[in-house]
Length: 462
Image: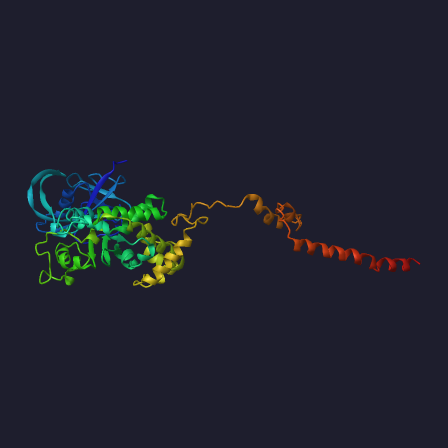
């Protein structure tokens, strides 16, 4: 089997799920369905060239890591030794890396192609910097860690130090403003984080992409089982590695950071909401970093991730049970990478199917999640295969369940279960209880001689 390799694929348009097919070509095999990759970006560019001038053109770079690929023979692909072409013969959704632009030729190489010798151009390219405008969490924090000293440094010399005097919301119910349609349709998670500041309460917005894709990866490695820890791990990884966009509702952010964050493309808002560098802007030279103390608190402290993971986890399980048609159409394929085989109703849903994602429904779902957390038999079965699932161990001993089984047996008597139950420890009776017990006994003793039945029997004998 080939070694684990990174395989590359270039396209001028966005690529989603790729399915093997037979390409139309006079120089390649016309019988085997496959997806063509190369072991290098240079190999992809050579394969795209086909005697065309590609200088100035842009391409999106996609990749996968796998050891399950096929190296075609030269009879199957004539220029395989030039392009480093390999085949993948299963459906796959590659990862987007970045855009590149071909800037020119670095030279030519002589290759043998059939009976001929050919000169093959080698291409120079660059990563398109203006498309890589976002910043990671670490970079956003580092740009703000040592700038903007306060005149009054009693509670901290700058915003980064002063963030500790603010507090992030601590309950799951406070994170009920998540657009689930945007999350599962576009793989964009935007979180509203309530923050209690030194003088007032504000809302910090954080947006990141690729959360659902990361959850799907972790679900696959977890034997196709979605668990709370799977979502937490996915959110944590994306938060630490992906590009982050921020915003805060406080005046400090509005007058010092809103404009520059939009210019630097690290803001949740787009250019249509740019207040501009005009009157009222108190950071004219962009020297204060990337956020107010509330933004820095949320970037430096990931406690909110657990709460957001709970909201997503509750919503997915609620949708599976209560919003099943929409779940099968919008959520299941994204998390498990396959369509649900038994979803006949899935085909009846319109293309613009929407998930109910209002604050009230998310509040209700979070309440539902409190009870759902108690483990039940088979609740984490593999949804793809229908197998697995831990069983909840019964808290009752086997002896207590025996009477129920005996009821179905024709030999069992109704009194047997009662005789086998352990006798309860008698309580000390009160004086009134003792009196109540004695009075019926005396009454029965007095009434016994008055019974007429023995006399009637003697008369019959006579």
